[in-house]
Image (tube, rainbow, N blue to C red):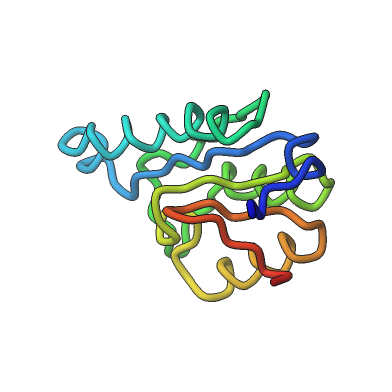
Length: 123
């Protein structure tokens, strides 16, 4: 049984793309390619719309403003996001406060976090 419901699919999937440093942008193109590829995965899972947020490329998560992460949180809070896709949790949040905020907001609006599996905080 899939944790992905028609309610999730009626909203957009959001793909959050981030690499922490300018050096990673130059030397790790495969990571970025795989992150952008999550939009295709979202469509394979049933979403018609996958919105890619890549505003935070080259920004560290520690103490640096991340406008893309703020856009992601706004999409979750407004109920626009049915799912957030990332290669791994460390791409989403680099500290406990951001991670817990993301989890709490996703729980409140029934938004899935899809990494290597599908995580549903309500189960």
